Image (cartoon, rainbow, N blue to C red; front, side):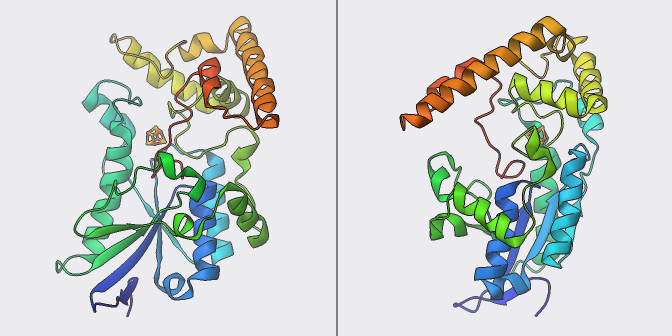
Length: 287
Ligand code: SF4
């Protein structure tokens, strides 16, 4: 057997694939599988759909994962560059018009697994997804499943929550990706699923990438389109008076969150203080 193939109970060929995002949950899942599902670990393939606009810390983390797992990660490139696709669509992707995930992640992933595993129209691909048991309410279950791909949720099945994920990463020795000091999720540097404070953090940590995001935005605003953020253009966001206000609001929000946590109350009602669709998550980009 090779190429991630295992015979299932019914005799159907089964293939095992985990799409890593460079985020903590999919990484922890790789280590969870290694430690708890040895037969799957032996056969599983790790892939990463590279938008070519990921954070440098993400690329470094992927290199580290390969070393710690002692397994290669297949890096899938988009069939067309983001810049080319942007010209084709002529508007920036956004939460409601999220062509970026389809073009840069879903399509390359599907092409890869179908080409590699299903040439003969046989077998099932088990796609392992790192949704946690404490996230079940927002999980888009069966989003990528079809006749060939069936989604598997080991964390949900085993009741693994956020704290467990942190423990897995710590025990494995890999820890969190370095970007965690200023943003809590993987994805493109220009990802619109980001609060204003995280945009400011991007500017402070990677001014060159912020500048690139400005250029992409400017090219579409010039044509009458929307920018990356609802409230500000990126150029305006970093003006000292705006950055100061954003930081103050963020600090107020953090204080309120801490109060709610202390009282064991839900925090979601506070989302409005720092809009940016930050609560949304993509199975491919952010898990
Ligand atoms: S990380 Fe954000 S911008 Fe990049 S593909 Fe995913 S949703 Fe789109």
